[in-house]
Image (cartoon, rainbow, N blue to C red):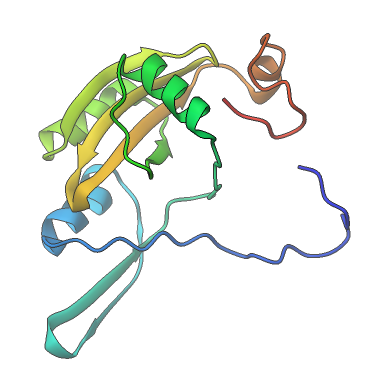
Length: 159
């Protein structure tokens, strides 16, 4: 990661993606129980207001231009399917996670597929109207950076 001021603490401490879910309980069961995101906090308020904060580990924000988004859809699914926002979760076993999430109510859009950047990626439509990827890295960051055309734009580059 490049920075003009490497000694300065990061300006952002956490990325929190806030998702409105019509079926709150189904979304919690899916993301907390089936995907395995630990509950960090939960709050209730007037008028049956509810929120649960789930720990998703390290967060990154991946910015892709339209050509990159189309290319990723083509590699992972074979056609354009992703809306403007797609949420990706790194897991230890993409095949097992895909099976578990489909059993918990997700619709499989594409099965686990090995990508040119050497990850095993599956696409799912999940509760709360989220289009998600579960992915498993098959090589280390250093090994992926050595691949021609993928991860070659400097430290921290991804495919």
